[in-house]
Image (cartoon, rainbow, N blue to C red; front, side, top):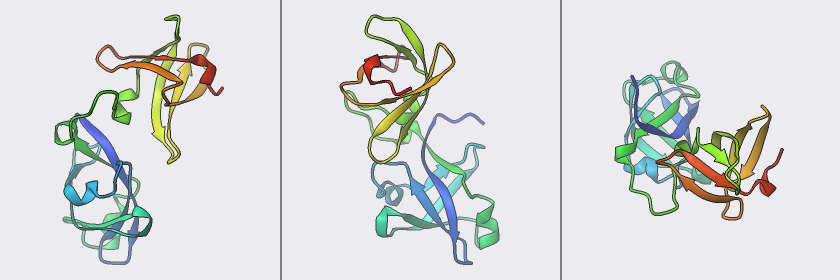
Length: 167
């Protein structure tokens, strides 16, 4: 099943014996998981959360419908949780979902093709792009106004200041 979804978190570990799990959120705010309860796995299987709570360090703990014990939730460990793009808020100008940045063609200021975005990752200290360069090497670029000059999601390209590439 092909879903037009955005990955918003991952089931990171079971808690106790009664099917409770910890979820690592990729959303801007952990409260996202309090407002939504229906998610999908990459396989297309629907996952319904209930009794969601935010604990210290913005960790989400929840039960999952039809997964009632530790053995059953262990089958879901490290599974990514997706929501349909249509269920997400509309973005403002110059805002992007990280998933939308993957596979963009990368150009420098002079419009020379440098490579392709492999992934966009937020490590907590900011977003970084992993870029496969034309020479086969991989480079990293901080996703900041100084290093990313323009993004065109519709035409699937990004223009960067190559001075900020970390090779």
